[in-house]
Image 1: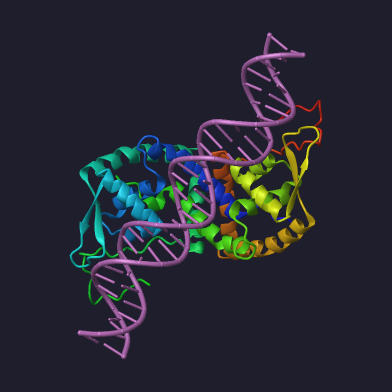
Image 2: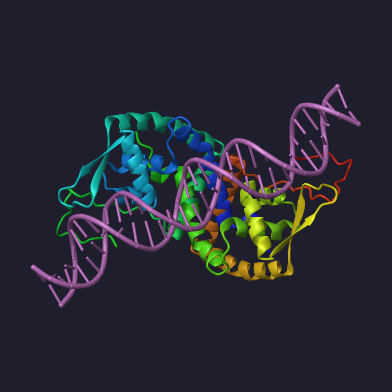
Length: 165
Length: 165
DNA sequence: GCGATTTGGTTGCATATGTGACTATAATTT
DNA sequence: AAATTATAGTCACATATGCAACCAAATCGC
């Protein structure tokens, strides 16, 4: 009659997620004083290049207020910079400074290592299986890989039919 | 050089976990006004029966302050009850009231349904694969299935060698 | 049996986060 | 082109959470 927390998928995922996060966090937190939103914005920025706060939010799956605060913090460190967009004065293009680039590089290697350590504890086929399973679940839950986001200043082909919702 | 957030395991898990949680939450939140720690404590209690707050914390993977607050809230609703333990006056045994039982039953079915809906979006073999993958990862990260916890008042066999760390 | 340490549980405080309101600008409608 | 609606981003506020200090009781060491 009960539901057995142990087997309840949302619980299992939350627990795993927290455990993983706890393993990773020290790398960006203790060594660099970043919090998770900040780390994610930085990573997103590295992924997609200069972009608006909204785009970074989409790409890092974060609420706009988190992004707003993270951006401010990163700007204060001079890791990122905001530039006005002349075509739309509401938004601003965020990009990494040289310092940001360097810091990101220092940051990313230990993080990758940690992840690698974790994955090493799984066999190679387990890694395979995990990846496929997660993709299926991502699909099922609709956390799709983000559609490429329109970067202002990059005019999009006028005649191309829009694929985005 | 980048690390591609999309493929970074901690990120993927966190995102999935949040998405799942968002699907589930309305059931216990909107309909019953419970928050997550409260729901989890209730579920844990249903799983393992009367137990101390510490045991419930272990079984629901939650910090003791979360448990403490959740227990107080659930007690105020009269869904659970605390009884003193005569053998150890620090701790207290928490158990569900009849009202709690009934509420839990009402709660658990919609939750199971939601989970079922989610899982239905995966094929049967995907479900299989997912389960195995998660187990492997749980193993790897050390979020082991909790060792059965000693309930005060249930004297444990004196001569049995302890298997617990 | 007494001091030191550990354990169960609560609380104060600081931080983190989500919601909704708000400003400013752009896009759409008519 | 005026009015409406939507979008980008920020902020104030309420809530949620973790940490550390704390109390009380039990256990350990000697």
